[in-house]
Image (tube, rainbow, N blue to C red; front, side, top):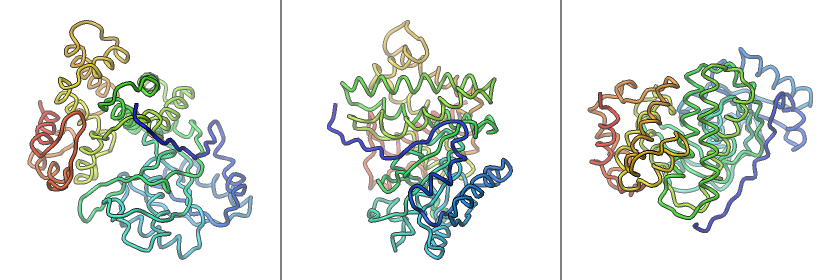
Length: 391
């Protein structure tokens, strides 16, 4: 186990109806003016927008609304939000939505307090020195951004999607009411299931031994997520499944399963190139395509970890370590298909001729070292993309 510092200051309000307390919660912190940041019109149609604004009004808290956060949130849109925060004197950015709205809110909060081109932070060319506090009302179990120090943003002009970590990104508080996810389309629920699994798996599969407690927690998160996904296929309004999935999403990315490890979110690195170049690709769908291909490419180098997953998640006990590992990877792929996820590049309309450009971008045109189980250059990444495109 490696040395680590673990810090998760986000206060969580979890359970049925907790979102209705937003006014009193904001007031308890002493904030005067809130930006409500959200995505499309779903929170308006559901009545959540009215509930939030009326709760703030009831406590005498001023607010300004800023919608339009897209899946794969963009820098140009976040920049508009930064300007509004400064002009309106906002002192809290409240994201109401899923990971896209939350990541966009984090970027807005940083930009409102740093007088510079904030894209440089995403490119690891500096770090923010301050930020407005961020809070969330979660409406989608997926990214874990409601408790994480990370945020992802897309530069549409460059066709690049990049993420970076900062303690300024950790929400001050997050409200998680699982019933807000009842009306999600099955595809969005499935994308969330995959994302939660990937946040956990990419830490679990790191080459760090003797991290038993983190391993056990990760396995529990994975089993719970798989079970919840199966239940929600048949019962989308099953509260316990929604609740367990939502909490699994938070635990998967608040780094609880990453403590004591050296890890790289390798499937995320690959997928960011996919949805950065092709913004219509949903993040979870891209991960469902690239993870099995990556696993097939590297499992023989570290068969024990993959074999362990095959046993504890899928009940595969027969055969050698390599055989169990491979059968386990096929089980992941079959589960993604059962959820209605794509598992091939062509299902996402990503053409083969784009593979080299995505691979080159992934390693920063040979300026970045990328390693997870094995080192990756353009050839290795293209080989993985090709595996993900096999018919």
